[in-house]
Length: 160
Image (cartoon, rainbow, N blue to C red; front, side, top):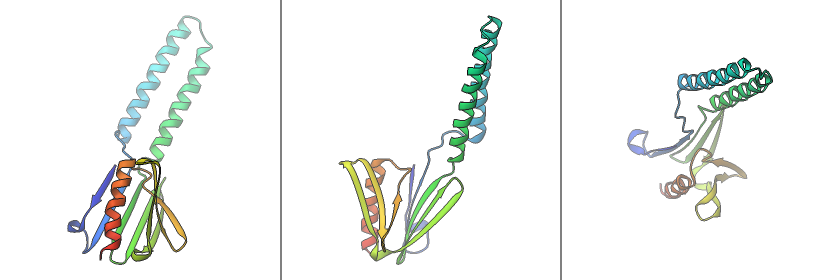
């Protein structure tokens, strides 16, 4: 999901792009879905145990553990985001992943935009370069959103 903010809602001459994961379930919804899946697994185990198939129990335990691990990994990345702000002579990139934040600041006029695609508009990689440093941006964007962001950024970085 990408959100573009223009000058009207920010300080003068500012432009911002925020990219975040598309999390369709809240944490309560995720817990509810996990609970239902565990309940269904245990219901199947109960029927299997009643029929005498006791070997189903350890495999179901492994399945439930794998489900819980997968849901925990999703929850750990639910609040990840990337924000790129162009304001005045600065380009600021903020990356937040698993609660750890990193911030990069470049000079607006020295910043290069690099978009590499395997095929036109397919499997694209967007990066901003300045002073020998390259920062990948747009991990949470689709290829079409990356291409659109490059178009917006090229105009913003050149104009004053």
